[in-house]
Structures are given as C-alpha cells and as structure tokens.
Length: 212
Image (cartoon, rainbow, N blue to C red; front, top):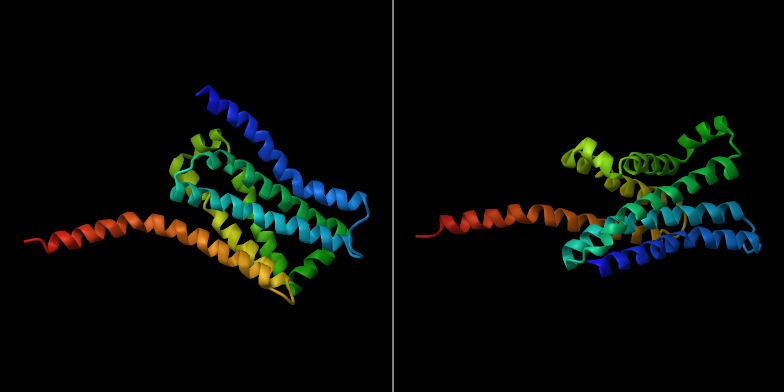
C-alpha cells in the first residue's frame, strides 16, 4: 500500500509537468523568436490543438480502463480535463485579445461570418461546469447519477471541438478528420460497454425461450 502511494506521489508531478510541456514549448518559441511571420496564428493553432488533444486524452481514460483493466490512469482524468480547460482558456484569450484586440463589436460581427467560432465557443463553455464540479464535494452535492449526467457534457464538448477544427481548416482537413475518427472510436467504445449488458440479457432471454 505504501509503495502504491509513493508511486502516485511521484507520478502526479511528472504528469503535471508533461501537461505543461505544450505551453512551455510555445513560450520557448516566443522567447527565441522562432514563430512564423504570423505568431498569433501559431499561438491560436497551438493552444487550440492541445485543447482538443487533452479532451481526447480525458475521453480515452475510461475506455482504456474498461478494455485493459488498468486503473491507474483514472487518477489523472481530472487533471487532464482541467488542462483541457486551461488550454481552452489560452485559446479563447488568444482570439479575443491577440487576434481581435478586445474589439467586442467586431467579435460580435465576426461570429455569424465564421460559424466555426460558435462551435469553438460552445466546446469551451461546456468545459467550464465540468471543471467547477470536478471535486469530491461537488460529487457529493450532486449525487453520483446527476454528476455523471452533467459530466457527459464532455462528449458534446468533444464533438463541438472537432467540428470547430474541421470548419476552421480551409484546405487540408486530414488532421481534423483524424481527430473526428478518434472521437468516434472513443464514443463508440462507450456505447458498446453501455449496451453490452442489455445485449447479453437479450441473448439469455432468447436462449431460454428455445430451451425444451
């Protein structure tokens, strides 16, 4: 038991530092003047892609646990979810501050012209209640079932984030489509495990009906 706790206290800061690697790399590019001629676009793309990646990592933890029986990654699900929101906040700030210069009337006019912004904002907003209710106290307040129902918003957030990425890319949509396929697989695994008990029960009923 003590050995497990020791591994947890060692692994947790290492995973935390790994989650900070993307923003550290962006800062490194900035301080060493290695951005492209359009640094705002570089920051926007970097923070946006990593937001989507952390959403995917968070969604992948439960399927990995169910398929392999490996329980350890579940300990980091809250952390990866919070980092998804963290990079989402950076992505949002980059848009409203560096890209739009806090021109709120311009931002309001920009949204109908570019629907992918609406999808991205939807994905971002849906992550906020998930982060706020990710503590044990909120699980107790909401109750297990209501908490689980609320946190299924991550599925909608993931779908909106993929659509945002697909609509944003104008030429080569290969990477957004790959993320879409990965999301479909992760959600499909969840659907399979949710339906499997019912399918097994149905088979048992059918088998019993044909017994002499």
